[in-house]
Image (tube, rainbow, N blue to C red; front, side, top):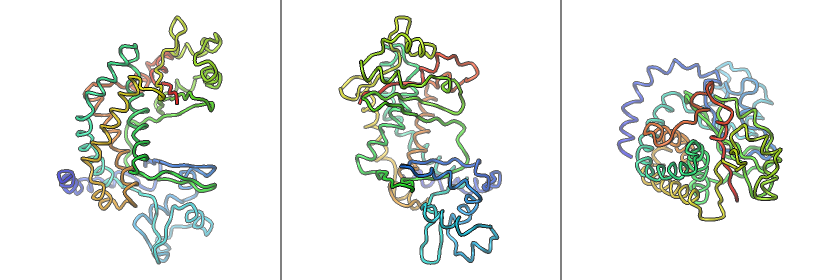
Length: 356
């Protein structure tokens, strides 16, 4: 990790000169990430974004006494204060009140991302062949377009989190009613591209996964999935012509009414599952080898090792994807790359099914 630490020391002073280009008081200039469990609680962003709570949390980023806070002339009410305390967004250490969630300003964010990029280069060198194997397997089934979404949603932002939890590298999220639980943080500037994953299930063994991005709107036109999933749960296939006709415009079925989107059966050792697990194992191994968690925790004043891993890997996973795109091992789906030129059938490129 020493080269990364030297790199941090070299860049941070230059970045400081440009820090004024971001208005920190505007919450829309910040990226917020929640690795959280809600359980009937408000999402923490709802609370942070209410009234002038963001201004209060930003002011207490490094800790203040109440007298010091009052001297800033930031208006707040007692009920605001109690809400922020009760929702674990402010913590007290003797007479010092401090924001309990990490808020990384521009200098910290850019430095952290430069470190994550360096770590990602090593990870990609370890998984490159397996990623090519994944693409080759999907190509045999005429679904190479799904490589991005499966690699991102199923592996890099999916299986790896389960492994982190199973191996005790990150803490399990346990929520009680009315209080969110887990980790929540802010950093700036926002990345130019981001995407996420929505999961849909009817309580059976089939789960439908949709990789989405705010850049596109076509997935919003997709019908409700209840009948689709219910049919799979009941029959392990879809034969109802009404369902087939409803989803065929989105590329789910071929002209012979066969389901085209990839299915990953997690109950058996099929090729897609095995390749995905192989990539996950290598990412985890490379991460442990190359990332100095204790040093990162100290540098950025993170709460514990679990929070450090969550925040650092969340940045690193985007760098892994970027590097794989740069190397042309995977391609950005048309629906993300050029939303204005995307066709309805391109929606299938973002979808896959898991069987548990």
